Each structure stands twice: as structure tokens, then as C-alpha cells.
Length: 135
Image (cartoon, rainbow, N blue to C red; front, side):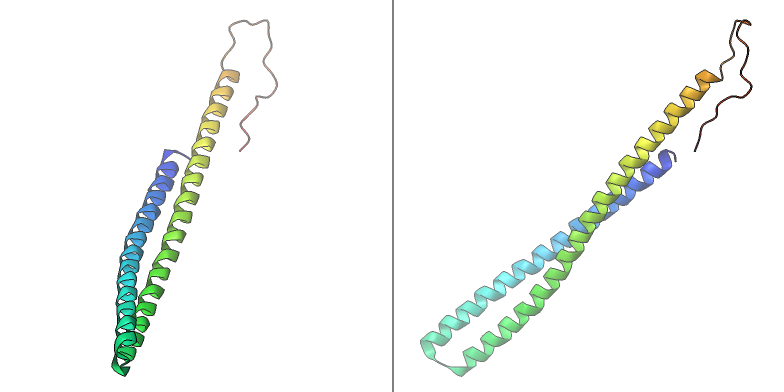
């Protein structure tokens, strides 16, 4: 576990965050189109209320069908955005855990380095075994 694993986890997190941002822009564009289609359908409903003509009803139903398709696509992009956000957060947390494990490993190496340092006085006998890092 070195800095490469932390860097890789951070890069993966940024990749997922970028994917979530892309999904957000696509979903927002589709929702804007859906709002426009809704306004168009409402205008067609007003036209039908004034004229009581069957052609405007057919046009309104066609518009609402288009809006439904657009909104379904927008919801798919929103699901992708939420998955991207969750994956980015999970990757960032794993990068932090890997960073903490690296720090712990470095501290353990420093602690065992102090134990293995040769002693200057010969009055203290050396132990029969030296402790080692348990991994």
C-alpha cells in the first residue's frame, strides 16, 4: 500500500465525479426539453378549450407522449448521476482509508527502526529475539 494506491483511488473518484457531472448536464438538458414540451401541451390544451377541435387533442396527446419519453431518458441520466456520486464518495473514502493505512505502516516502520537500533552500552544484553512488524 503506497502512494500509488491512494493516487489511483483519487483518480477513480475524480473519474466518477466527472461522469456524475456529465450525467447531470444531460439530465438537466432533457428536463428543460420536458418543460418546453409541457408548456407546448398546455398551450395545445388551451387551444382545444377555445376551439373544441379534435386535431388539437391529437397534437396534445402526441406532445405528452414525446414528453414522457424525454422524461424517462432524463430519469435514466439522473440514476447514472446518483450512482456516479455514490461511487465517487466511496472511492474518496477508500483513498482516505488507504492514506491512513500508509501512515500507520510508516509509523510502524519507524517504531521498529528504533527497536533495531544498536545500543552503545554493553551492559544491556541483546534479547534472544527481535520483534518484527505483524502484517
